[in-house]
Length: 294
Length: 317
Figure 1: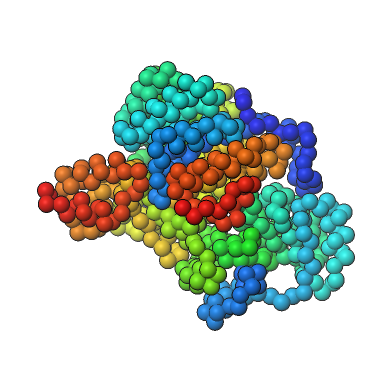
Figure 2: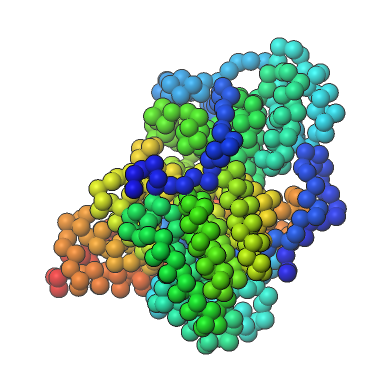
């Protein structure tokens, strides 16, 4: 099986190929946080084409609650040299609504931008919908701070959708500088950048990753249980040992840490893991693995 | 079917939303106590706290709960048995299910628990169906079909209701899915689950997949329900679930605080709040806040800053 047949991608409709307008992401993190950018941050934004614009703008708030006539009046009343920002705060819109109102707004022939919040977990989807509908400018912040659509999550999705080159997205560098600059604590559950993004302690998942690794194909191992390939963005898959682990998890850890994966050692560690209420720390595993009885 | 009905009261004004008033009900399935606890950062709570979480699921109007994977070992069996016993003793309406691989060694403990508690259990039997999984495992489609037939038939013979789950449905071939689901339905599966196991899906992909599988189910002529199960890797889980609802699924899965494998599952409270926005639910906001806060404390998971559930404070645990 060659790589092109690894995956049947339901996201891709051969009858309706995806077309992308010119995309501009306007990262407003420093503006909304009220802090000056560092030279590194400015440089990273420039490299990614994320540097903020200074266009004069007219913001139409609660855009999803405006009916056709109200939206038409608001857009036509704005000064001709203004960028019209379709703003979904407080966030209410679903992607279906975003598509409908963006297509309507585009017919009025004014330069448009999309801005939305994430109060329902729909910010990224809404922004992607706005972009595909033809509204190519989107206002973002890194990590979605100040309730905006997250620059990072949008970049990841645009890379996965082929709208931007994945090599062009230096996500780890951006994330590390953003966390420092905005004093942002990245939770383990944060998409792609969080500690858990490519981590599993589950036996079935780990076994499949390990089998894939044994083929020698790193990409296969990276994508078998991960919709976002870790190595695209500077990360790697991690296998843990915990209550949901199987023997594969344990053997993987032992080999990686220089221990012989004997039946006895594996059995002892697995028994301990099954009794635990959480994933075991490396120090705990070393203590068990290096015990004299082995 | 007990489910969430679209309300005839339109609130608030949604001028860009097409009418969904005639949409059939959708149910909520809570995966907090199974997929949720597979998150590598969570702590598996003691059974007393799992029971409290269960009761809050009931208070929040959640219809079903996957309460564990008994095949994982004795601790899992003990907890699942206790949870199901609680549902029976307290006459809770929430319908329990258990996850398991399509293997006798996972099916039998589920059946044992059903026997011991006197409660009919749904067995959520999963098998990897994507070409990438087949490649790594050395499986061919015939093997998947044989395994499916054997497992579903056995589970049904043991008195279990079967939800048949293909892992990584969103990256699986249509022909393979058609054959697998048909086989499962012919062997007695009452429900099929379409999964975004690896967090790859987009709303467009979900819509295409659900519509095609709905058509398949209709062609069988059997009364088989369709579930959607999603993950958060691309930040699209709620949007994907909405797309699944619009395309016609019967039940949608979520976890409290979106905990789950890797960065987690679709956040249940965001689903409930979105359904409220659409006029489909009138949740008890106090119960919803309690549910979120209890899972945060019990599983030792921080509530993200600005998490939009009324009455919930961001807690760093």
